[in-house]
Length: 426
Ligand code: HSE
Image (tube, rainbow, N blue to C red; front, side, top):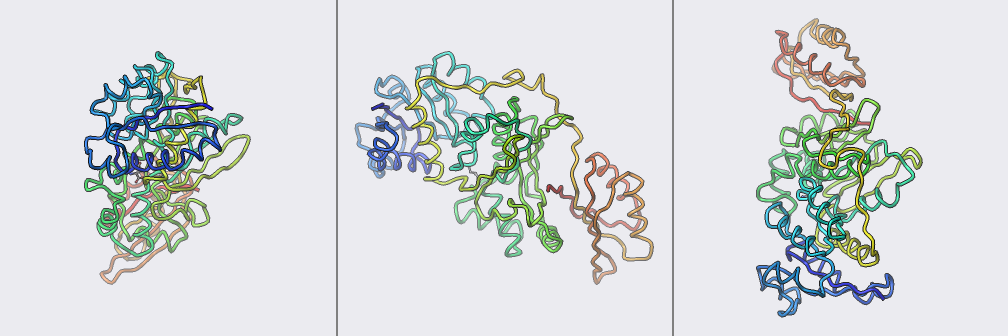
């Protein structure tokens, strides 16, 4: 039976879940996987936390050097997060020839080439299933289950915190601020929620996932990013009335015009399976040219779901002697050979506040027509103060034309305000 010694760096929520799975299921893994996994040591500053999880005192290491020089440690699990200490520890582990399993999306999205270089040099494994979409095995699906396909698109709800907030706004009519407060109370959103609500977390994940999906290294700088802080409950409610649900989507497409990678609030039709992914759940929809559509759904965060992804990497690493490294069509450090679509196409939801008087609608539709933006649907709601809300849904058109249309609309004297502009995805 193959044996492997594991070290866990950081015993926070995810480290604790990983420790629990590895220790409680040791015998189960021997029987079902033919691997004998032992947690040889942990590196955790809060000794009390480690002891409370059942770690024996002599297995609590006091430094990274103690971990990487331990001959019984084969696999180092990094669940510290961030790019400071975590990067230093991961590089030390790799340079000592240890295989690394990490859940750290920011570290991976920002420093993948450097980490991989170290891993290759030392013939060490580098695994990161838990970095994207928590317990959902999206990375192994892309690497081990979709080889027969050219992946055409990847679309997903890849941040649970924002999905919780948007679900609450849609179902309960809460404001963004109220929903965020509740997400913080429940522990989904951090005290400083910026990484989630401004779309950084989703951008890191989309950069990793689209690189694997399209075999092209896609840096975070290539991903268009817009978070949910500008979303308001009125647009969610109007969209709902018209048959759409608002989600923060990560969208990657490999088209003839180039690669499109973007994270932004998006209306999807209520019939779209992504519309039914609620609360803190995540889902990823893939289209491959051989298999067609695939969708994976599950928990994108949490102790045991993320621990599940980490342990699956640990078992994979323990079973394999030769390691696989992702290969890309372009330079591994950048995007030199990849063409990015600079002006993508989409459908748009546009809400305008205008003077409610004769001829306004025809003036507005004239601006759309002049800019070659075709209208698919219009809804008008008269307000008590003599204004009207006009909601326009366009056909698919270029983003640049929509921007020109909006600029022109703003110059009309009957126009009070552009209240909302939201991209739509079928
Ligand atoms: N903060 C993330 C989310 C989980 O809300 O989905 C870890 O990436």
